[in-house]
Length: 363
Image 1: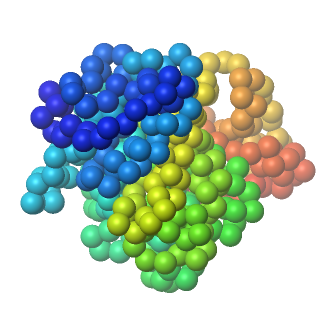
Image 2: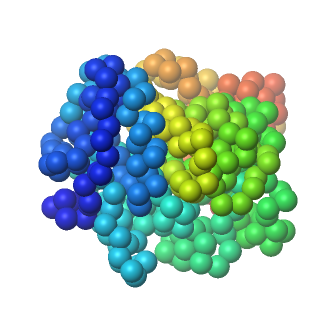
């Protein structure tokens, strides 16, 4: 029973009939029933209540009654490993119940417990992390995942990192693992590109240090550059739309630094857009339906042709990549999200960079 892991929400929030709070089953008096739940909000520490105060009045979604639950704030212990173990068990149980978790955390390292809970018995999974830094040094998130992932089956996408916060050694480490890294400037040039990384991710983590100080000042440290509030909300919606994603975490909010509650309001909007994306899911996975248009790009030289598929449901694109050593083994064929621009490049006789990067992971 999950109830014993949580404290009741000590808030007096009165939501209008049009507010999101009117359709959230929150742990204010009795623990929420989970039999119809699809999204579960989880907090860590009392700072989360400031975010709830801004989340509950936002507009509600249609036809979602009893689908969203707020389980309250996790009971904490003096020993951090006990907190991590509890969080891992909670996320794993919710995933097994088919419930997508939204976790308001303290620091990005808590993402390791989310990773363990989402991974379960999976042989492969994908994690996307939006942060101004690449947490790959000893005892940081990525290094912990690497230690656990001894078979090297976890794909990591590190988005919105800023060069002045990342050492050459950290860059070399993450590149040696064939993970995807996208600098802040490149991401801001085409924010829609982030959807390609969210699409196949089982776990998505957003550190608010990735958001510029003017839009999110209530965090440790000063970050003049970063994503705008609009870009952060757009990424959150892409995260919600992902059919593979079963857990979304947002980290780094510090209530004592939030003089005018600007950051709490933004965190609430980010969560709202994630939920909005969640209710826009279309089960649009290549293995789930046949509503695709196929395009084959042949080259004049002896390279293997590239097969592109476009969903009739969403107009999104994928490319199929055959294993170079066993091209006829369909079990080894890799299907990855791509863009229309990737198709255009291939149609012009060039090889898309995304295709070449994917080949590296197959070797």
